[in-house]
Image (tube, rainbow, N blue to C red; front, side, top):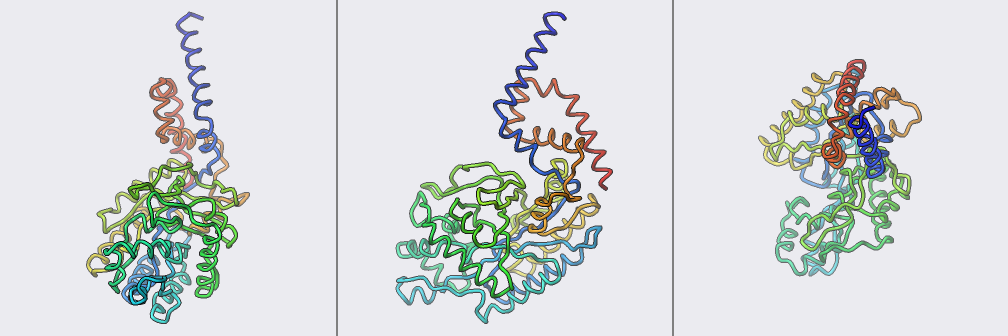
Length: 412
């Protein structure tokens, strides 16, 4: 063997070894993450709760649109509803001189149309409820800030005010953002808040949802423990965990990376929601189609995030959002006829099952997806590029792409 060939072999071996040592945790996580045999699409919509009758009408309209779009198994498209269980009673709080917190909860008679719209959609299989907090803020934090912030007192005085109008750091329920940087909450208070929310949801819907969505995706170990003790089985995450807000109210750096199917210390399954469809912000169906194609290549589900604000308010705006949502769903069916519509809880159950048709056991398929995930991961992609491994392994990635295409064709 010539010296140059020997040098190339030694260099390649050293580069691969360095890659596996430096990035061993990420490589292991990418390999262990479940590989879906076919695409899964879930519409994840947050912030639904107490509001005017028009909000209930908006939900009924959404239910009709979702029921009209069905996958090959006959399952209608599913929208999860992150339920916020109450609003502040601003008039009572201001009349009380902001001495204590008052609320208007979802079980009040005035909100019966919203509860009935949620129940009807769940019965039709197009809605699935998720926990999104008794409030979309920590009450004591809001109260403390309102005592010194005139704009918050104005917000409380507006009977039409929505939590979306609060400063973003105050919308983080599971921290004390009355001061910045934020502080952790007392774990005992967190447990009481989680239990209170669960009791109300159980009273209204017969059972508390088993999926929780942290408000603004900020939470910590105390929240996870409280959810685990309150029949939650799954947490929707953005693919990382953030535990607080900094001195300017911005999200702090993440404390960990999260992959689909990973468990918390308390045994809760974690799923990743990192695609977006917010028609009110200009998002269009094409973005959904691109997301499904990309996630299919990565063997991952598409949980795309949207919010109540896109579907309520001015009639023309809400109708345009409904039209775009339906166009997105029908376009996915045209491009991926084997797509499956599931709720988030159902997806978690499928991933937890010992044997399921949704998670592939095919080694060629898993290898092809694993290599696609490696290329997709920014830190790994940079290492491959600057070490020269990407060029050396180009034939392997090419073959993997062909393998994935064949697996996808068989799935269809």
